[in-house]
Image (cartoon, one colour):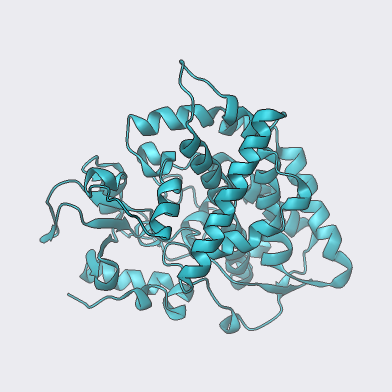
Length: 395
């Protein structure tokens, strides 16, 4: 078995060209072990579905590892974030998801279309005369963040600090900065919840603070954890979709020009960019609830297991020419939003934001091009996310 390390997973070379990296692994080691992460990673579409759907792979590691007293600050902070629908199994997952799902139905999300379009236009208005921008900082980041914070009812003058906090969350190189940022982030949410309980408004935080479904409500930890999840998951992956997707289109000019000529293809293009560019390259954590043998490898009870979504989405046993970008492809079974009961609640919102963002960029900036050689671009060092730190463009 190849010796795989955390450093290999986050290397700039493999972030830049993940298809080549995972094609070799799919062919030689469909499941591999990352020693310094104590984690198994599966690479094929079939195995990814197994990990995402099979109840033997639990989301709640408390079922495997008993809780201990005397947690360190990081553990205590993490514990506050663990009571959301992403980190638990049924029936807890079913209960938590039902309390928030009404705000994310396709019908409810479609009502946001005019406001999302307005935000996209305002962001481009701010840079239009400059003829250049950092697509991440000036467009891809503020668009989805503004949308989710407005949904939650967070005042506009308090939004700037969220970039520091969310960047700290995906930063794996400075644990102490991560802990202090997380503590500040969660403290802010608690204060926000307290305020919305006293002075409720027509926003999602107010609704969650008061929501009751079949006599059930969110407790304090669940509420804070849910809002934390909605803020982070509600924008971070869309940032990567817009950044990665724009880079991919600029590097595949035939696809870029095709979309300019035929904007009706944009919904299919967003699905293809989700599949091909992998805003989330690895799934979130599952733990084996019993010993499981897969491809001759023994996964012990308690072992962490992840699915390489970018690899699964290009598996030739699932899709032809999966390492090729084709915006005319009709592929709806990709795993960019996961599968099973933990399928991404925010998928309709991410899709709509992607469709509006790419349509607006193509319409308003037809001469969009890279400002620097793509070789100079750098990627975030989080193993689960694939995103650019910046994307300088000219227009």
